[in-house]
Length: 118
Image 1: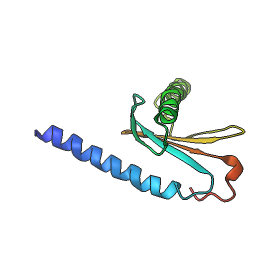
Image 2: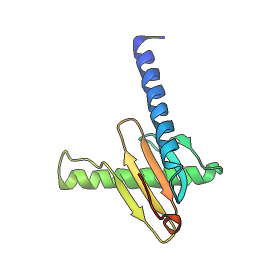
Image 3: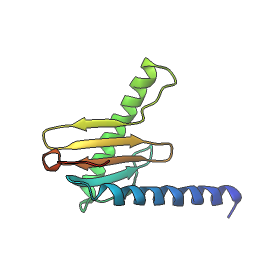
């Protein structure tokens, strides 16, 4: 294993551990439905959804949504970047947190949320 491959593997392990810590924290919150962690290309790193199709749907559509939002922000203020997106519908609240290594997508049911701590 080369030094570069070792560094990439180390970064991936650290990223995965960070995802696990976040998952433990948000999964206990009222209204939590699921979490999907994706790469910049929309590939799933981690999902809590039982149905793979459900996770793939969120990954596919929201990766495009996040990319469009990022392009819009950059067009409005060159060099600026999206750090957090929140979308709320009648049935869902979707929190999107883009990062350098991965993007977290947290889905919750706003009808079951009373007090949220995240």
